[in-house]
Length: 177
Image 1 (cartoon, rainbow, N blue to C red):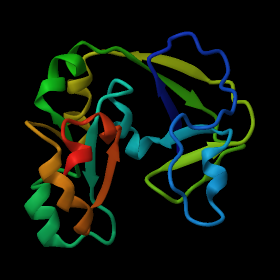
Image 2 (image 1 turned 90 degrees about the vertical axis):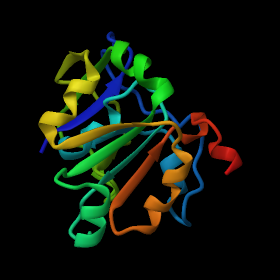
Image 3 (image 1 turned 180 degrees about the vertical axis):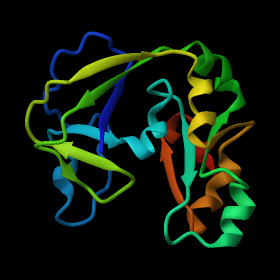
Image 4 (image 1 turned 180 degrees about the horizontal axis):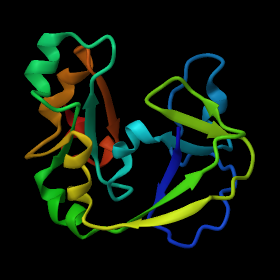
């Protein structure tokens, strides 16, 4: 297994644990996830972060609990899909991000969407610059879909697919629907 962190900063020599900028509501006993941590994503789901940092997106993928009807209705022949507002297309096409790889030692699996955390400083093994982000999805079986609005996709969380919404506070109309 490989662990990555994505950033628009090309010069990070070490990752120091820090609290999240916008704390999430956590279940009892899990409040520590808003505290100082280094976050990483495992390779199988790293496409969740093939975006500029503040780009709102909804991502769905198959799990062992996904039923055939949901897979057929939402994914067709793909293993996953990424939804982005059409107004963000040029931003996505022009973006450059940096993928930092970490050694897995010292990370704890959260058992949620491929996320791992470290409570200690982490020095990356390497950094890879990524450009032409839209081309990174297809070879991985992920269908990149541009839509006018992410709001009509709210029902995805009621399906048997795994669904993740990232930076949705930046999506047009999200907080009003």
